[in-house]
Image (tube, rainbow, N blue to C red; front, side, top):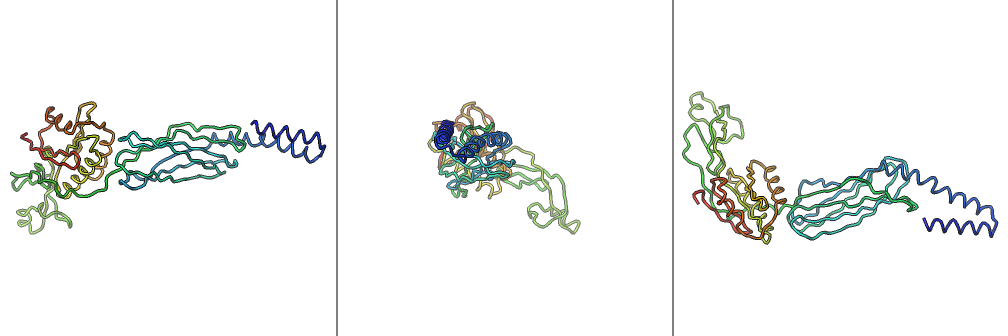
Length: 332
């Protein structure tokens, strides 16, 4: 505004000194510019919207996080300057990185910008927008768009199978009417019998009924017992990277073995446990995301000690701390 006022005074002085008519016309245009532009500016900022998101539900370690910024201007107003301040941090670490981005708001346009965020560590990466400010062409006014904009993206370890995972107990004691289609001390009952379909497991064929009816029939099973194989990660601050990587490898190995198991997450702040059965890929993703919000601790066996002192479940426990894997039988 000061520069604009100095410009006005300068042109007025030239007009009085030189007494040229074209300077008067130029001065009139100079005065009308803010009169015309400022109403357009206030109309634009009230209708302009902003959003930020990440199209990926998660990313793997060492891969950039694609962070999208969208600025939507539905009006016919000319472009203005938009400044975006945001910070990025990993919830496991104290480092916070601040960034500044400047883009233009074009008329009748959606401006989309992708900002690749580098990441070298696993954990929950949080991006928080601290300012979205739009400034008019003359830089007279700056309007901050209301709202809180936060994007959280989990970063998982590169998935690989844990080849040295010790063997786990298998089920037994089943007759022709029950079978365990998965290991880990699980028993199942027959829910129904239906005709064989391509892709059905041969272990589920009901041989006596198939021989009697001269056709193949399979047994649909209903699980009746509780899970008794538990993966227990230690959220030790020093080994958290290796622990999560080893945990993911153990999950993959047990799933390849077709074992039934669950993950036990220990919250050291509230001293309680959360048990999550690993039934599919979405359950694995949910477990890792929940793990990223839990507080870290300095002890190496805090979860294991609390598990056996609380007697929350009788189970075979696979304790994971860093790269170290230890199996504790349910009789312990």
